[in-house]
Length: 342
Image (cartoon, rainbow, N blue to C red; front, side, top):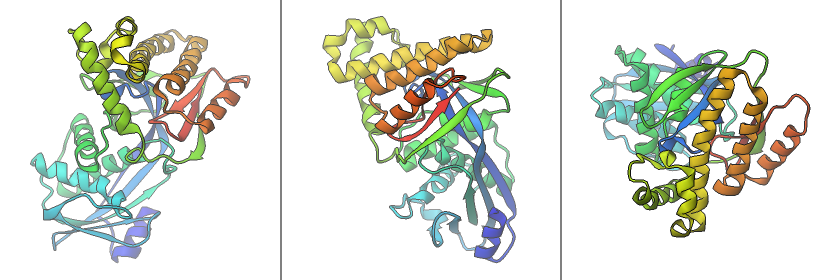
């Protein structure tokens, strides 16, 4: 229990406690930072923080999965290097909140505990950020609407941690609800809930190949997509982002894009179409169509976006051969992590 960890470490009881769930990406692989749409689901595991104020302007952090305390000064918040880099998630939230003028003016003790598997692509980082944000709001007596919390946490990850993610992870964690998916329009930052069919379930299979997106090829994919859009916007100037370019335009510009950027752009544009088709299939109860879209998403991630791996491919191939499985795909950033099956 996080309260026991807090009391053992700091010798007193916490003043506030906050929780945020992890998430799975249902469909919409890497569409978020490309301005597209995605579907996610909050899960029944997550991150819990216990927190209390200090009078000396210091921030003390302890985790059930790490050894020792990490100490940082509230008035000199800067990113830390390994093995203390895990603290950059709450530090980033503190940094952005203070930039936004939110009253985080006192030091704190913070303990964190997780029921999420680390490195499995279930957004433990986003859950950690949101739980910290909720805890800081409760501790300092201010109220921020849910969308603002999501934006603060995304900024913390983009600007402080250095991970150029979109808003899917934080948005799904914040807006998730039982028996619903969260539809995220990442360009307008709009969040709506889509009912899940009661006749099916989501299963998560951990490949046990851990990924660290900050150190993986995620940033490289982000750059390749940006470069592809710079080329494509000349052919389709009304497109606001890469995900809004039509797949036919991408195919027509294959020579100008070059092989790598062509594959990245075709994945993003076709994946954005798949998200829209998935919403229609969910609305109409067409589970076989939905499952086929999920599996097609994985194949596109494997061949076009090249963010799968042998372990993920093996799981998808085995799962889609089983009776009762509508479809399966990698979930999250890829390069390891987990597979989701419907």
